[in-house]
Image: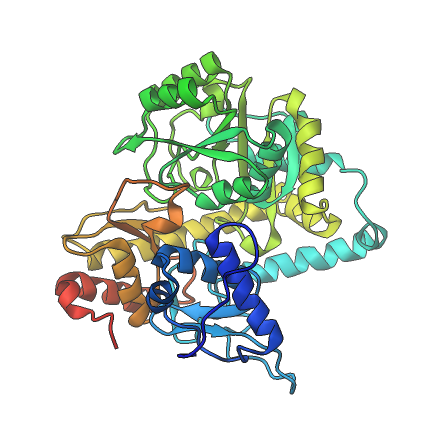
Length: 470
């Protein structure tokens, strides 16, 4: 690829999009062969007079289009159809994790926080079988009407502390992410602002951007969202919604105090902002702090599901909302996802109502606690936050480590983690010098021991133990 340069004289849109389109065109024409390695981002940026960030965005767009695959330190390669039908050497279908679809087999997956495998597959298989036997007609058709038990299951699963939602406030959804996106799609319009913390579950802000919503960033400190900055953002940008994780926030693990929750509710009421309370990790904890919904029930939507505490693959989710929102959100969720499949919704309801989901959650918590204990012992002396019942750790890096550099160093040593950029809801000037790693996806505890030992060794050695050039 040393003599190849893209033609950027045609096309429209921002430079990164024209670059991606030009590369796609050259792939289609055969100018770039399948398996070819694209130029390093820095080299191509120099050759076309662009920034490295522009080239990086173009390569990311190509990855989203399924045209290339890449891994830090190894380069970006053009994908191609294999005429012999052979499959590339990817993770086996039954292996853990989903983010790096072309991750090599020898990496430890510390980049996911799905529920650990404690044998719940056998329970799910039994429920699946009985559901198929009991409802063959419903499985073969589209779901038109939701039975009452689906709402009852959601009301039971989302109940926590004094928050006890009624069944007529529940919308069954294809997971928590779909629940939140259904609410955003239903209650905002393109161009509206949705507020987020600088660090959060950024997949929501990215998804909201895809449907035309704009992001407003709200400052946080060591105690969580700053109510004063939330009020400033409300006065200046008038967001229609704010997305929050008040208990065991992802990725920082901060839990908002009752005082801050009351202050946030007050500001939201004054500026007519809808509150989305993601309680996905809070559901794992025994934290007694009242849910945000208890302070502002008329404007709070609570979302939760089974992915972190039971099984991510069953796509179980529900939201509780003020009754006036329920029909709009249900319709928006159907339009965004194609609708609820009877099989999954029924399996999830049976798991919850039978008490099996609660039993699995207890087993998952016990396994998470054992793995977190390994982390605490191994990383003693370093600055990190963890929770006995939450499947990830927020590690503050010592000087001179940078978040992205540390992620790359871990990758070179066979461990996949997430740097802070993965959690930035928008372009932020704030730097946190942190990384998040999960403890739930490796199959065995010995894998946790091995992976955390790599992290400890890199922390001890500093950047002198990692050379990014090879």
